[in-house]
Each structure stands twice: as structure tokens, then as C-alpha cells.
Image 1 (cartoon, rainbow, N blue to C red):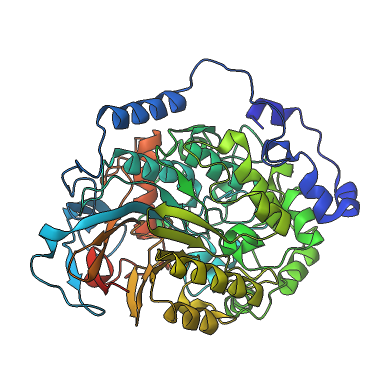
Image 2 (cartoon, rainbow, N blue to C red):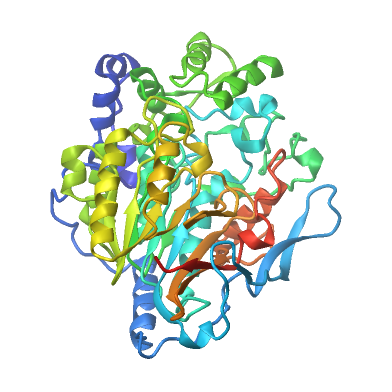
Length: 581
């Protein structure tokens, strides 16, 4: 739904929404993202948009420089963190600026197999691809966001000053991938991108549309509610939050955050995405499936999400700390304490009136699949981005896909729908996985596992999953996210590769290349990449690219943000050796 059509939408009043409940609230106005997988015809053709033309240029560039396995592209580190990394300059005190810093060299890890001499000359590339994880495309004006927990949170995760720029930043990452001609270690052409969850932030339709449009190409406007102005915490008048557009001496400006006139208008301005020039596959995370990434869905949350009130502040830091502790511990999976706080403050002055918007309605797993299968979101393909009619019919989000000849990918669903940000793998899914692994073993196929949660964040079913993978040595790697930190661990027979997020600094994605060394071993190369936006920022540059640069620098300076998320050197750019099964 574009800006002009949203102006004409008549929203039901609060009483009607309460009567309808979550399911009907989600269905109302659902045509912008959901509906039957192939329902309707494509919209009439119009003059090509800048996004369409950019995508066409990327496709032409690839077609004019064809590469094959017989004639691979010469491996090149250009465009990766092997060459350079955005790095802080100056003193650690106060607001820090970024500049181009030295790259991270590649290390060789021999935890699972020895590195034999001469392997590079014998090496045969098998596949090369890219992992995105934890993009967190955020509707920062959503009524269910819990920014007001900031005073009581032990980390900066309750609210990040950079979040309003998540969409142009994600597009800049897409532009980076489109600029890479091949794998930086082997030169093998990149064949696809896979996401490993938390593509969106708050289980709402607006974020899902932004994610799918950015990935497949097109114009999108990262704004809900009032079509002409921002209605969130950045202009609340509360010192608790950074106010970029005015002179309020807020807490973040006291730490050196800048005043940037025009920031909020730029943050809700239309964004143009070229879309990925590569096919891509999708994996769901807890923030995709649950309100706030941790609460089980309810009719109350569905009603509040599309309504016209937003809580900006609590009475005390102690109350914020109590709510944060319940969220962080997982002791309130249904969000009962959160609902109590919202209900008790319906008429409070701390509850701001905002423009109601049905695009903030939650979505179900079936809605998620339907949206991925819509023709408008096909892009470079495949239709469904891994999901099929079987996923829709069986109401499941796990599937297999072909990575390359002799290599199969398996995407798992590790979110628990009864609430909580930690992971879960059901017995039914594990039984299905066991059958799939047996089939791939019988075919002599290597397997790569993709999920959102890590081995250490799945209390329910995680031990059985690890045991199952250990019994199947043709599983070479388990690739995931969730932790927002780079970490690579040997798991007896395979490597577990966890990649940092694209919301917290240093905001990274990862290329992966698999090769047969011709000596009884395999090499799995991992190379980190940043978005294409320059490291240096200019506070006067509010272009799409300028905002993407600012997103990274604001993340570096976010108060309470975790540090060390880049991981150790052997968690970054590495060659991981394995014995051939």
C-alpha cells in the first residue's frame, strides 16, 4: 500500500478491533503483503523506477562478465573485510567517528583436520554463497515497541538510536553483495544469499513488506502511521531518547550525539532498492514470529499494534528493570506483565496518541509463507525463497534446497511460538530432519544446516539436534545467527558458524565457500563483508547512502551496546578444514 492509498484508508475504531481479535485484525487490509500465493495479476507496467534500473544494471554487469567453473573469476579480496574495516578513530571517550581501518587477515583453523601442503593447487570449488543474519528491519513507530525499558535494560537492546535507518542500511548491504563477482577465496561465482532469521523486528506486516521489497527490488517507504511526519520516541520531548532534529539537551546529546536537522524526515523518506542480483532463501527467527521477539501472540497485542496509542515512558527505573528482567529471563513468555503495564496506562499522559495503522498488524507462519510466495516478491527467485505449497499446507517453516551439485541446504525453524527469545526444535521437526539426513547420506550428498538460533540457545530439543548432526558426518556446517556475535566453533564432526548481526556494530554479513582439496579434506572459507556505505559519515549528507553510513556510526556509539561482537580473529576470516566423510 503506497502513501497516497494509505491516506484514504478508513481504519476501524478501537471497539471494532477489540471485537475482531487478532486474526481478523491481521486480515483487514492484508492485500499489501498477504493473500493467496499467486492471487491477482501483476500491476500495470509503468516507467522503470530507479530501483528497477539499478537492478537491471546489476544483472547486465553479471551477464557481460560470464564466469564458469572451467574459467573461474580470479579470487579477489576487494569489497570484503580482508581489505579494510570501518574502525573508530580518536579517543574512546565521548561520541566516536568512523574511518577506513585495516582489514582482517585470513587464518587457517585445523581443529577438525590438518592443513596439508599443496592443497591450493588441487582445490576444486564446490559452491560459494552469502549469509545475511539479524537484519532487524524496524518499524520504529510501532506501538508495541518497548523503548521505555531503556533505563532498566542491562544492554542497549531495548532501544538503539540507529534503528530508524535500518532499511537504507540493509539496502546498502544488498548493494555490496551485488558488487561482488565471486568468492574472495576461490573465485567461485556466488550462487545465492541465505538469511538466518530476525529479518524483521516486531512480527508486523509493514516490516515484512520492507524486508521482501528490499531483497527483491523496488521502492519502499519505511514509515507507518501519519504519512507526513514521524511519531516515535525521537521527537517525544523526553531526555531519555536522542532528539536529532531539535536542541533538546537529551541524555544522548550529553554523550556527544549530534544534532542533525532533517534527520527524521529523511528517515521516513522513500528508499530505492536494486534487489539482490542473486537468488535468495529465507529462514525465520524469533523477531520475525513473535511480538518484540519474545512474546506469544494474543488478541490484545494484535489490537494494540494497530491502535492509536504508544507508551513512551515508565514511572521509574525500578519498574523498567522489573519488566526487563522478566523479558530477559523468559519468565513472562506471554507478556502478561507487559500487557498489564499497557492496560493500566491507557489514559496516562505518558501514553502518546499516534496515528493508527493496520499495516502494523501481526502475521502468522502461514502469512509469512504466503508473502514469500507472492509474485511481486520473486526478484531473482526462486518463487517462495525456499518455501513451497507444502510449507503452507503443513504450516511448517523448515525445508530443503539445492545448494550445488552434491550439496544440499536444510533450513530449520527454531522459534518457539509459546513465547521466549530462546530457541526450540520440536520432535516432529527432528524426525523430519533425521529422514532428510538419511536420504542425503544415501545419495552421497554433503549437507549445510541453516537456522536462526545457535547450539547454545536452544534449550528444548537442542541436545537431540546436536546428537543427530554428530551421527551424520556428511553434515559439514551449521550456520546461524541470533547471538549478534561472530563465533566459529568445532563440533566434533562439523563447524558451527555464528555470524554477527546487521543492527549492532560492527554490522556484518558473511560469504562462505566450500572446496574439495583433492587430498581427503575439505575447506570451508568464511569472509566477512560490510555494507557498501562509506565508513566516514557526513552529518549534512542525508542521502540514502549517507543514512546507511550514519546507521553504522550511530550503532558504534549506542549507549549500553555490547562490545566485542566482531569476535576473535579466528571467528572472522578463516579457512576451516574438515575431513571428507
